[in-house]
Length: 194
Figure 1 (cartoon, rainbow, N blue to C red):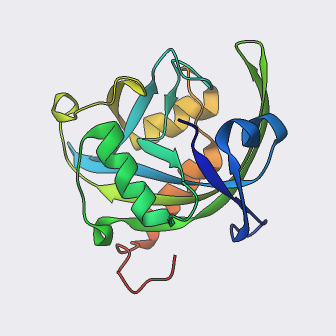
Figure 2 (tube, rainbow, N blue to C red):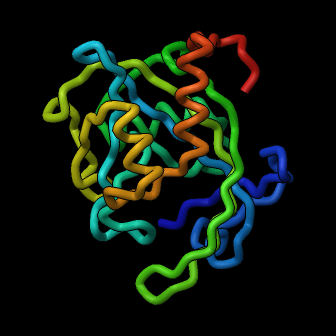
Figure 3 (cartoon, rainbow, N blue to C red):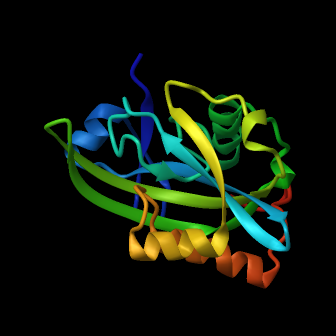
C-alpha cells in the first residue's frame, strides 16, 4: 500500500497538499522525515547506534545509516512518527519526553538506484535518544534493517569524514548531535513546540 506524505515548504510546514512517497522521490517534492540517533555511554566513551540498511532497500542498500528514521505520513507530527519508527524498525518503545531535539536540516540528493532516478527533498527533525541496549536485544524489522552496530561517536565521525565504511550518513547531522551533547541539551517536553 502506497504511503502518502504531506508536501511541505522550505520551513517544514505542510502546504495542505499530499503526495505518494514514490512520486515524491521521482519528482523531488519536499516532504518531512524524523531521524532518531541512539546514544549510550560505554567504557568512558559515547557510542552511537548505526543501522545497516537491508540489501533490498530502494535507496542506499547495505549502507550504515541513522539508528532509526522514517518518512512522516500525512497528518502526523514529528515525535509520533519518530516513536512509531523506533517501534517498527528496532522493536523499542519509548516515551515522547525521552527524545532530545537537536535541530532541523534540509536534505537534497539526486541519485540513481537500481537504474531509477531518485530525487530526495527532505525537511528532517533530528533527535537523540539515550538508550543502552545491546545489539542482540533489538527486534529488527528485517524488511528494513539488516543489523545494528554500536560505534564510538568519534570513530563514526572519523569514518564518515574519511569514507572508510559504506554509509549514507551526512557529517552535518553528526555535528548537530555532537553539538547537542556538548550543550547538554535536555529531552523534549510535552510542551515543547515541534
